[in-house]
Length: 319
Image 1 (cartoon, rainbow, N blue to C red):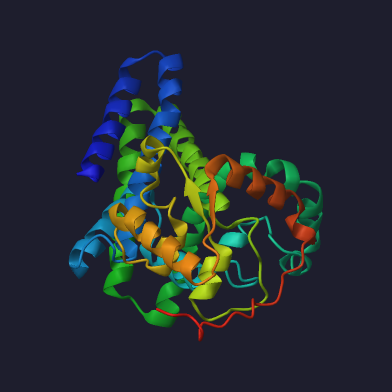
Image 2 (cartoon, rainbow, N blue to C red):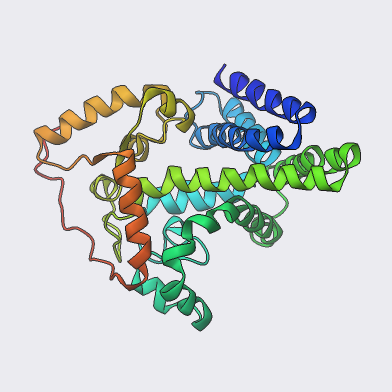
């Protein structure tokens, strides 16, 4: 139902753009971008198998929301997000989310970068991180296509690979080829670029405050304590939370990724009480505070050294 509401809202934006003067159409671009981000993030829920107990329903949602709607390969996303990020949040050299090209979040990743990138990180990362987030969706599309090209060499031409390829062809046909034929290249390419540029900013606004400015480690704790120390929840008004598809409850999402997003608020109450009982951190911050912290962190992140994994043991915890 939520996907239907969001899809209807996006369709209404495009219909209105077609009939409004240029200034009116441009005003609707940010609205369309926010809605498109939320639709994309329903695919994130399907990828974690949190949408349904049915494997094929989860997979259907993934294909509809990711490669077909968003142009983002599901195989790439599962490797980048489900395996590397969720398994190793804020781990230097492993978590791809803390080093979105060309930026870095630690000195260790900085010194491993080529000379030109090191200059960029020292001199420009402070000022261009947020403006360049408009390219985030484009960058992930490029990475997912490269991942698909390399995938058969290691895994062969699997059904999942063909599913991604067919879905991506549908995406570019529906989003670019048909609009270009109907309205010309300026409108077709222009609307596509502007909407997904807004989506890139929205993705940065969702993911950066959840992890950035929290500890970057040079190794993995191999347990749930690591998730608690490197993730925080974001306090949002309910109307804004609707569009986050559960990603304002990052702590519970990282601990229990198969919980559907509509159940995460209740899960947060249980987890917060359990952490308080056992003397563990449960990090929550007002969204604007977390956003400012993440911006300050990225300004100086290239010179910050990763810490050793937190030596916390769960043996004394009473479950």
